[in-house]
Image (cartoon, rainbow, N blue to C red):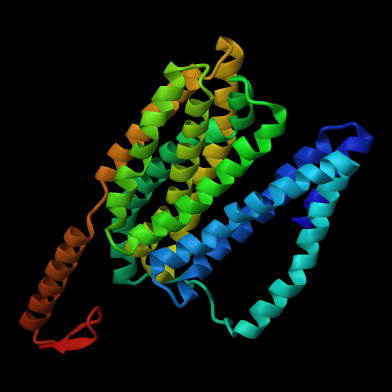
Length: 349
């Protein structure tokens, strides 16, 4: 990540774009995605409930932007963009030392995921894979549509607000800081809610929170308040997705298959991150405002909620698991064998 930012800083003296694509886009982007995925996976080790732990871990990413945005602004004003990007790289490189020391002292040396045998697959693994395939596709679509909506708005937040008359000096507070603050709140709130209600319910109502503000901003093209509210709502929904999706994946896949499953679903974020800002920009260039982009974002939010409604409820999953265990016990009884219920660690004859 540090090397990527150092590389990107050469874009100014070289007057070229390729250092940004290589350094920031490829190198820093790869490191950011890898670090984020690992941090979400390790949240299960926190001495907290699963939802809150995931929310707190993921919120650190958004909180960092909230803290560093004003500092970066001052660095750009005082020394220019090259210095600001280079300094960020230096801070990240320096953070590697305490991170290494914390990991080394934590004693977490066991693998984060179980390794599957390449030569043989157990019946349990086959059954889980068959059950997971449709759930993975559904969660992928739910995440893609929900995040696509938020990223269409957040990626163009500065232009959205400036087109409504907000001053350049207020863009950092009214744009970046609001998005960072709301995504931080959303990540913690989403995780906290998942500890109290099924994640499916959170995934259903979360994208609906942004529909009203998005439609208001689309209908009123000049209101700064409407623009700010749509940006805040998009950030809140984005943050809630960031913590709720991992909790739901851990529930349906289990700790052993979490990394493998979440890695596949997380590609939805990559697709949305590439396509959503581009599509919003195309709409703006063609029509001169963000009306169509905001309407599309609202429609995608409703679509995400409808997709989440199709997810399997925890109660239904528990009933199916119980029925499956009873069926296995009956089969074992007919064969004169003993059946071990591994889900309850008790033996049934």
